[in-house]
Image (cartoon, rainbow, N blue to C red; front, top):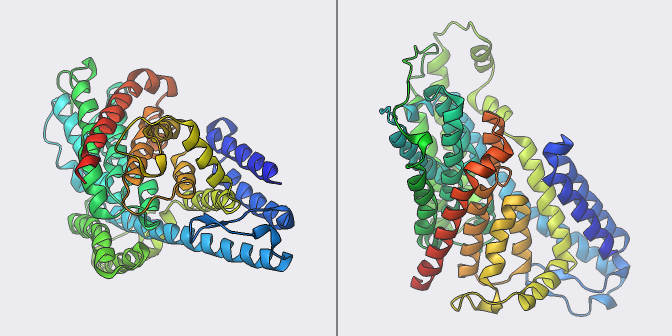
Amino acid sequence: MESLIILVFVMGYLAITLEHSLKMDKLVPALIMMAICWATIALGLDSFTQWFDSAKHALLDGFGSYTSEEKMHLMEETLLHHLGKTAEILVFLLGAMTIVEIIDYFDGFSTIKDFVKTKKKVKILWVFSILAFILSAIIDNLTATIVLISILQKIVKDRNVRIWYAGLIIIAANAGGAWSPIGDVTTTMLWIGKKVTSGHLFGYLFVPSLLCMVVPSFIASFLPAFKGDLDIEEEVEVKKKSKFSSIMLYLGLGAIVFVPIFKMATHLPPYVGMMLSLGVVAIFAEIYSNSKFSMTHFDSEESDAHAHHSPVHYSLSKIELPSILFFLGILMAVAALESLGILFDFASALQDSMPMLGTELHHEGVSDLVVLLLGIGSAVIDNVPLVAASLGMFHEPIDNELWHFIAYSAGTGGSMLIIGSAAGVVAMGMEKIDFFWYLKKISWLALIGFLVGAAAFMVTRTLF
């Protein structure tokens, strides 16, 4: 039965990795994989001899001697436990996505375009790299990439030049997401899973992440693609910008940044603070929405859509629900492997077979090489299930350097291939970037940044 569950997981994983070739959204294999894994566990419950207690992070003693009723009761409790932990992440993401859509509803991100006041290609590169690094730490790397490439399309008209900028934005956005608890889904998972805290995450990873962004951008500054000036056309504003756009941008970003502060003050789960932030932003959105549209004549489809919905309803209709369902499927599927102790056994075998690279990281003998391989692996396959698996494999205490290294590797390693991160995939779609063009032109920059940042982490972790 265990072999069947592993086979189902591998097949589902393969389908997720090949979603572009199969032309099937990855949520489909993720949900099917999750359901079949748990159904197989339920049907073959009596044949399993071990069970992993997620609360105690250890295998249960004497599980084989449990009665069928006791095993079924334990499975139901475990399923509920994992659903609760997954729901914490999903509700948190729903709140963050809705706040971002409310900002966009008021055209708040157009304010960022005002920061670009130069025609020099190198200066524009640095402006976008720094913006991507900072923005992704607040609104997550996926959303930051969408926002900045949308702005880039209005500034850089030549697509052949623009895709170079997009490549560096991907690297900077993934680097920025790694040092913030709200900057990347995988970092959020580690934060909500009580593996890292905001302060230590910043302390351990800010400098490595900064170097991961700065070094590739510095090298790119000398490449021919970023020499000279841009031909910027003065464009006439067709759509009048909302007078509340700047207010909603700063209010929304401030509300998201408030969430870690709320958690530190109250020790409540992060989704509670995110719901509070969403409520506050929604109040202002409703008030400003009435002011925005009360005297306006609607003559376009978009404004008509705005007219018949409150900002919150409109924003909820725009959030990316397929991603939420994908996370549900993949996290619950990994939970099935964890519950049977498969991940625990795999981690033990991995730690025994891998050589030690560093002397500092000696808790339970987890090798630096394992974490670096996880980072490289996240460029090929999705980093969400990799980090979900690591949560079940390793059992170091909160703020152990291992968790921070995993956050860095999984967050930044995906930049090495365009399909290796959500930021890369969305940029690929928006700019029709070719996989092999990215591999030849950008991947080596991402690899250098990743390795420099990893080396910097090995130094910064000795300071804590």
